[in-house]
Length: 134
Image (cartoon, rainbow, N blue to C red):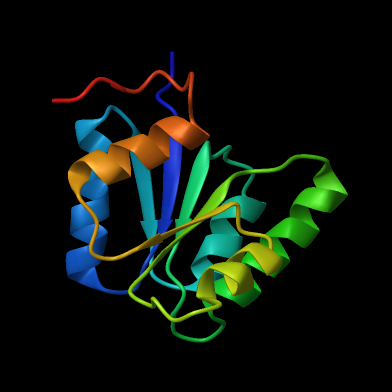
């Protein structure tokens, strides 16, 4: 059985590595892209993702715009992939902006490995990953 896949949309290499290692620790396959355009390209290829982790600030189109474009593609194809904002922004109203753009959840950095695991379990409850604490 193929592992559930998580698409990480993040342009900072250190953040990419952190998210990759955390997702792998809990048993998920990970695809990393650095821009909205790359994310849309991966989604258009048709690979199913159990979850998308989306940075807000990206080169070119930001994470909010990318999310809106993903939602348009999904409407045409009749499915919905959970998208969680992973952002260093913690301003009042930011969570509302993310949810308004079509994201399903919001995590501000920094976060603990346990907070990350809880978020994954919330959005991929039966995804086959290692949901127990390690």
